[in-house]
Length: 119
Image (cartoon, rainbow, N blue to C red; front, top):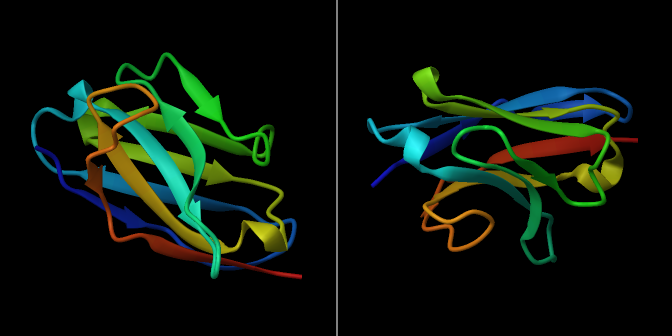
């Protein structure tokens, strides 16, 4: 089992950058594939990015491809989401999640961190 806690959200102007962090507890972090999701007010939660347990594979939603980068540091039990060229439509609560299966069956979720992009 793993617990995850997100941090790094905030208010930023359009075109700016933020780096989100997701710290995981437990000694088996490297066994989990990780993903970032977001949910804007009145909308369903959507996939943003994912990274394989080794870090060798990364996957992105079309809406963030080329602007966001997901990475992980297994010795530090942390996954990151570097967000550049932010747009007002990126405003959402961002959550990270862990899964034993790549790109599906995310069982462990954090509480989320708010990202607000002003125009």
